[in-house]
Length: 134
Picture 1 (cartoon, rainbow, N blue to C red):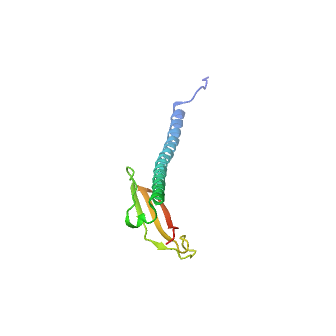
Picture 2: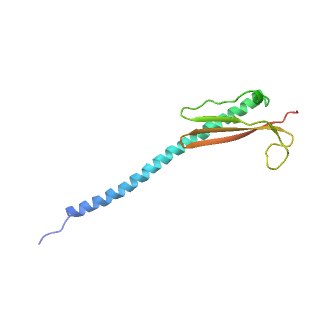
Picture 3: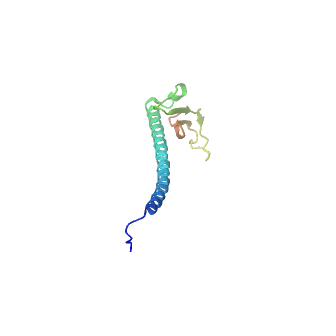
């Protein structure tokens, strides 16, 4: 009589094929995760650059006053590989309507800061208000 011990070569090949197919599926999941992490990192960097520019905008408003924006252009440093846009809106006076955030009788400007890179972008809108007597 022959004693049965161990696995046959055919059984080992079948197990290796099953493991190989499973590992291929897992590898594709890791590939998708890596791409998603890279996109999220770029999105976070764009948000940080937009926030930095908004803080610089508010510091300029505090140091040079509201009227400075009427005759000057505002720009921030453009980070490497990113596109930065700063759009200073026109002057308007609040009407007290609920559809606007500008208080009644106060001069305001909307400033939109946009930072983008490939498929990731971030935008911040800042309301500058002139609370000084007109």
